[in-house]
Structure formats: C-alpha cells, structure tokens
Length: 90
Image 1 (cartoon, rainbow, N blue to C red):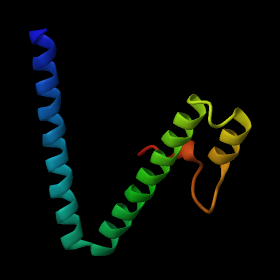
Image 2: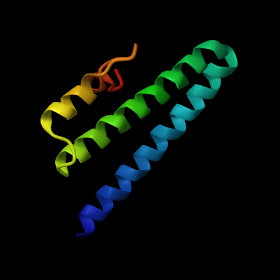
Image 3: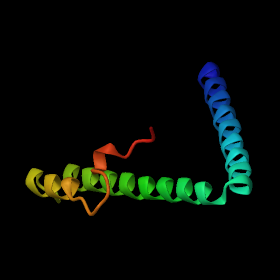
Image 4: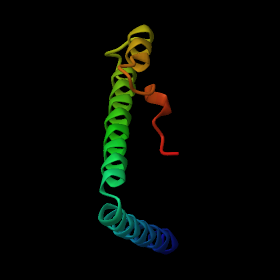
C-alpha cells in the first residue's frame, strides 16, 4: 500500500515537472515565433476536442445509446479534419 502511494506521488511529481517544462517551452516559443505558437496551441485544442468527441461516442455506444452503425458513422465523419482515431499527439 505504501509503495503504491509513493509511486503515485512520484508519478504526479513527474507529470507536474513535465507540464511546467511544456508551459515554459511554449512561452519561449510564443515570444520568438508567435505564429508557430498559435498554430501549435490551435492544433492541440482541435486534438483535445476530437479526442473528447471520440470518448463520448464510445461511452454512448457502451451505454447502448448508439449502435455499431451509428457509432461508425460518427467516428468516420470528416469535416476537413483527421479521423477521430488519428488524433493522438505525434
């Protein structure tokens, strides 16, 4: 029990450090190249929205509110954006 709490604490600490580094790097990028920083932030926002939509579709399908055909249609909708399955950060 104690080791799992230590592991969780260490994991949280590393996530916080990584997030702090990302914010620092994004700030430096924005200062030197504002157009690139805006593009990166926009792309990340779009990925977040698409991933959220994909998760909601899976929850609805798991709850029986969507059948396979409906879920497949929703997941394959493309309005000039990548398929919901291809939105992981690369």
